[in-house]
Image 1 (cartoon, rainbow, N blue to C red):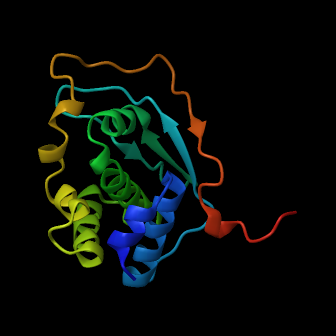
Image 2 (image 1 turned 90 degrees about the horizontal axis):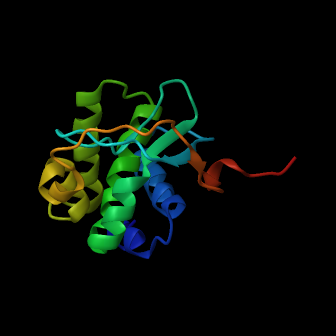
Image 3 (image 1 turned 90 degrees about the vertical axis):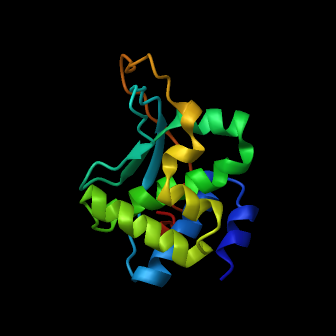
Length: 164
């Protein structure tokens, strides 16, 4: 499968996620169905921002919508590679790679296997900060008053094979 071509053709986060699932299944033989994606404002910290998180033993990935919007507005060519890497990282957590350092290493190795070492996804997986230095507000640390989750409809399409 040509993962780079598939990613270029993706039109939504759900499309990107389908590519993530195919890649993880094909290389690692692990799958997880029934996941949901929620977008939320996760705030900022001077040392960096949180791209997403997966609460262990749940069925939801929570992705920080602020970086997504900023990338889409300021550097649209990085949007899909960024989304792929973040969703890959969190999906790996959901299929059993709980340790953060192990998960980062697996995401990097998998990115390079699927896309080759020179693709943007692989480069982001090796040095995230190189691509997104302007997403952090260095003098501001803030958190939203409350966590408002916006669920992405029809996110994990592969797990809905019938309607009750």
